[in-house]
Length: 118
Image (tube, rainbow, N blue to C red; front, side, top):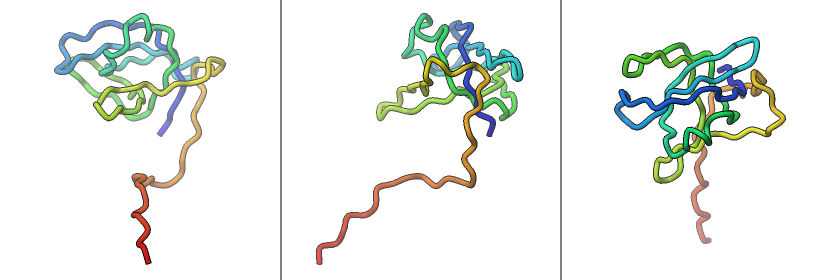
């Protein structure tokens, strides 16, 4: 998976989406350029999103969402209530910077079982 840093350059509401969402345009630097996606991140205001650095998976292929061509996946973490929190980057990271690949297939992390008294 090709994960890169990008800067959000455009944000607009996406009323055609089934769940509340925005359309985002993100600049991934000179190699990748500007790509568009939709994201269910309406817990952020448009002003909070514009100019923000994000992480995007840019080589997954395009997907149509309510007639809109989504060209990459913006990455975030889910709060227990299902709220998406976008992954953050240091301000010095430049658009287009690649995140290192992690080899192999990752298994879900879980707590080890409690130790048996004995």
